[in-house]
Image (cartoon, rainbow, N blue to C red; front, top):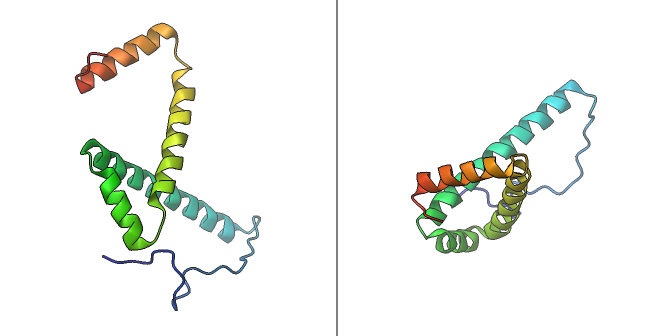
Length: 116
C-alpha cells in the first residue's frame, strides 16, 4: 500500500519549518519519549524484515526496488543500522571471557548447524 514516502506534497507531511520544544514541558517530554519509542520500534521492525530477506537471499533486490518505488534511501538506513548493531554486539561480546566466547560460538554454531 502506498503511503507517505518522505516527498513533499500538498499534505505537508514533509514540513521543514522549525518546531520549538520545551524540554521542561511535561507534554513535550511525553511526546518526545513516545516518538523515540516509536522510532526504535520501526527500526527494530525494519531490521527484522531486512534480516529475513537477507536470510532468503532477496534483500538487495527488494531493497533496491522499494528504494526506487518509494524514492527513499533504504540501503543507507540498512548500512548504518547494521554497523551500529555490529558495534553494539562487539562491545557486548568483549564483556565475556575468552572461554565464555568459545561457549557462545559453539552454541551459535550448533543452533545454525555450522562447523566453523
